[in-house]
Image 1 (cartoon, rainbow over the protein chains, first blue to last red):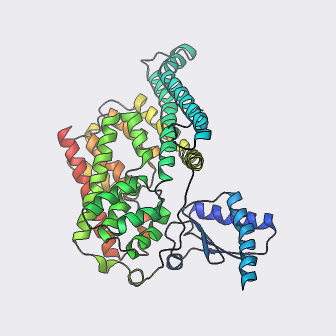
Image 2: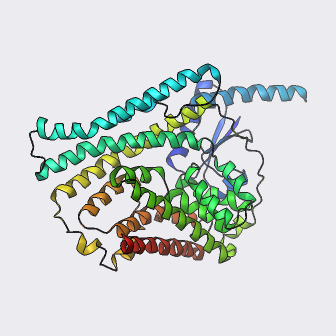
Image 3: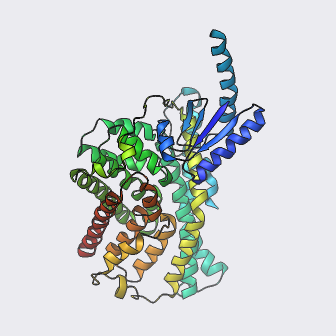
Length: 89
Length: 356
């Protein structure tokens, strides 16, 4: 799983990065977390309120710090969604 | 500390019948408790100073302590209530939604709308750049985008609450009105000047896909929890500045001689307004700390226009924000932005020194 945290580097963005790390550790899912702070790259994702979280190319939240439960739900549901689409293929 | 009453729900929510009565009761109860407590603050500060500490309320120390003991909880309580209300209100206005509203608008109407939306759209200055890119690439005119970018930091609920709490509703209303006017007119002027070529090239060449951000459909309990979250985050962050600011203000009240500020910040000193604006630009204080000091200066003979201009300059023209905006704007456009907004603030300063 590929997690991207988008944010120019304010306090909130750091908070989100830590939260995602904690969520990944707690769920035990294998995932990479990448912090993207370049404005040009952020804009390319179509995101314009930061911090934002993108998981496997899908925008999960913009402009706020998610709760830990939300983050865990994304990790869990993402896994299910992936297996189901793979099954259809 | 009165900041602890986070859990009250100020407005009765018209939603699903099941929890409705419970929310209404909690809300009204909380609000009632808030007002009861609020009305006790003035008698308590008098009691505290003269009875408990045995100080003469006319003495310098007595005056200072009474000011501090009254104003600190008062301002913190007002702040908690308003930040909660604005937090709930903001759950209706995401930047994505604001962009959709502004995208089809022409100038003039667009400037007014943008300035108004700047108040209620959640915004932090660190996301000014992504927001700028998002607006411009979606076809929001440059001037309209600027109206938003000027209004969002300038007209903020913290400044309004503190002005209301310490200087009364008239000054708060003046600040709100002139702040909006500056945002609308500055944006309009920047739009008229046709400065689109001073946006950095990579922004203008950028094509972003706009559609794949899901709209959040929040329930009322979720909106209330956003209000509580706003209180936790904003009041938790600024309370120390409020206390420090009121402390400094109390010191000025008690010890700085009456009329001392008149010679440097009084209305007859013509140069004080531009100097106030210039000093305000590199200062990056938040409204929470600066209003109490401003209030105390006013009491010592500083003119209202000068002091308002200083405040606006500190809040609306910040050096760090300009450094960030430099990534998407060429220096010429930043200069125009600072010039236009700075002139607007100076006009407001002179205007109030003249009429009040």
